[in-house]
Image: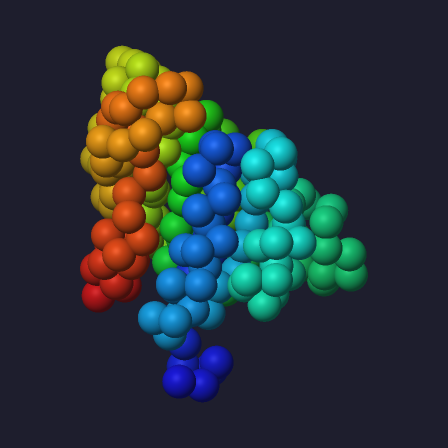
Length: 182
C-alpha cells in the first residue's frame, strides 16, 4: 500500500510502565498497513525514549510543543490534522483525567482536542488506580463522548502480583483501531 493511501494513526504515548509496549504496537500497526505518527506526554520519556519510538515509527516523535523546530503550523494542530484516528496507548490515569476534563497542557491532549478523528484509549495502570472512582468516572465520561475504550486485561502488575489493569493485547487494540476507522 502506498503511503498516500495509508490511514494515519497518531499514537499518543503516556507515562505508564506499559509504554515499552508502544514499540511492538507501532510494528503491528505498520504491518497492518497504517502510517504511524507518535506524540508523547512530558513524562512518557521516563519509560521509553523518543529515539526508540522514532526508529520504530520511521517518523519524528513529538514530545512537546517545541520539540519540532521549523513547523509553520503549531505542532499539535499539524498532528491533529494528519490523524485519521488517535490512539492513546498506554493511557495512564493521568491522561484519562486530562482527556475527560479537556485539559490542554501537553501535546497529546492538545492534539486530541484539536482533532475530529476518532479517539481510542487503552488504559494501563495499577489495579487500584484503574478501579478508583475518579478513574471510573473519567472513563465513563469519555465513553459518553463516543471514545472507544480498549479495556485492560487481568495480568502481571509491576507493583507485584496479578490484577486488572494490564494493557490489552495488540491484536485487540488493532481491532479497535480498525473499528474506529470503519
